Length: 131
Image 1: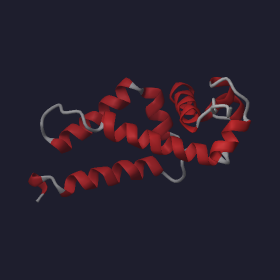
Image 2: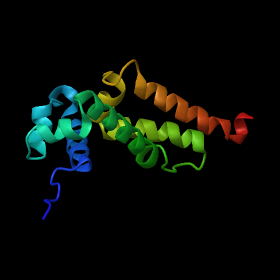
Image 3: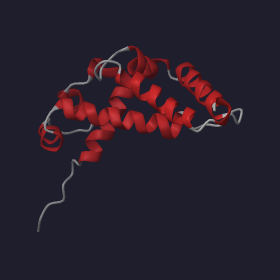
């Protein structure tokens, strides 16, 4: 009988994501991620190939979180104003994570700033008062 894989890609990504949310990238090492999900470092490299690839997967997960959990709350009913208020509220409620995402540049030259800017531009393209 074939053994079922215990350490899945999703488990690694979830553990690494939770580590980054809780502690930032200061502690983002293969050993710390492996320790967080109770395994050796081998499954990390088997699933992602490198820590850079795992970091890229975390970037995508953070972007998904921002779009689906942060930038879509309705406060005033005005989509552009709501996005600005959502961004500010996120910074107030999650100062450490905000710092990791938007102040420290762990993903290359302002990748998260560019992502948020492009997301705002897409909203603006459909924003009737701006036409």
